[in-house]
Length: 260
Image 1: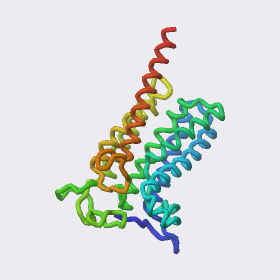
Image 2: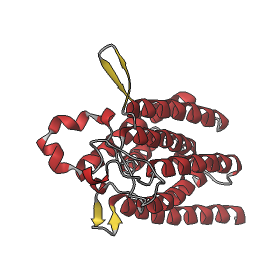
Image 3: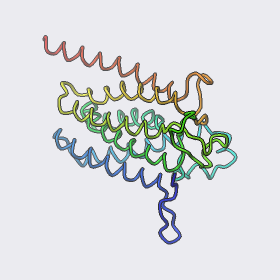
Image 4: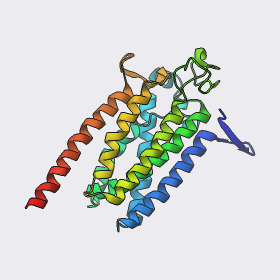
């Protein structure tokens, strides 16, 4: 755990924020490459990428604030201290998907085609973000009960779990995201219809996230059903069902067009 990366004079550079920044830059490079391959207007894609990142960050932070509402009501200035950690990732897609739909429709841009370009960038940015979680000591796992795992001493960790071997759920998820990223790039290259990449993501990631949630030990993330269904698992379920319905509809539409 290494929450503070360096100090530039009196200015602290937090490792979590640094990882988020690297993830953003990597995402931009990936999206730019895929936009060119799709013969899309790169400048327009960069515009939606920037605003999507902003909206996603706000959504992720807002959902985290909801899980810690009493603390933030008592300490309102803490709401802007994102560099110290404190994002619930799934709040990002909840905010970004409707925003992107509105933005692309407003500018008369092809939603599904552009969504397929954007989603791999989101995934690789998320992977870097999870690495940042390791250094800040958030999003930690349950005790492993063995000598396997990571020890954390951060104030973000429950006092009873500090110095105990915990499941490295941040690494589980970062590794899974890298594999998903590679898989999405393969699908992007081979896809038979627009929307196949993003809908595949919203089918696969919710399953991965729901499984990893079973190993999470940070109870502050919140539950819809206490001790049974976490907030992230509930959102994952909604995304999974929605994506399955939409991908079946997309496949049906493609088949109908082929027949006619």
